[in-house]
Image (cartoon, rainbow, N blue to C red; front, side):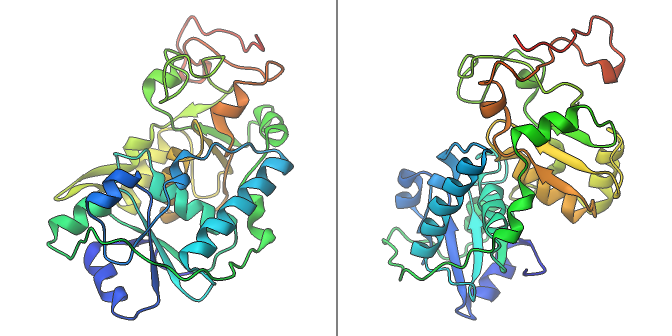
Length: 297
């Protein structure tokens, strides 16, 4: 695994001179065509693909993205650098690309810190020319699949107070006013996984001169302490579809939290199974009155 996850624009510009970098642009095709980093390959499916956490769903996820990354020209030797517009405009989609790469066991992956905006603001080269990539056999290491937990494991974790279930969604989803970023009623149920604690993904970042950037290690540790997370706390993250969790995954790992996994199916999957319990109202763990008991309805 490449030892530096977050590359600022000048870091990336230096690395590009080595010629062993594959750039993956996760933005929509229209934004990509309007201007991108020279040589970048557009892979918007990184953002749009809705995965399930079942064994079959994880196999489909593996197959789909091994194909996408292989077609982008990744063979295991190249450094994959994923980017979005800026760190807060794509719900963490560049981080989702990074997470998919390490889920597949790819050994060299990084994120452009600050995204395309930071690159352009640094007056570094951009182009509207189409990129041509040479497909390569993508190496899959199934040993990394343990990063993702399924709904059964998440349900077991609900009854295990030693594991913190961390909801990183936006506030309207956390309080049950909306079911997803796709619309208030996109999912059949609103609420949260019982016993979850809330640390909105935006809190992992702060303003930078070219847009949001991740907070320092000490700042992230301080944020984690507000919900009882220490470097030794087992954590399972969830959001709506695994993008915002990927942003938080990077933040927690950068801060030294050792055991971090993701329920990648997240609320999109959990809310669609009526047998799985949900919690509504003010959360009990915050001590608010009027907390609703978990319900499977």
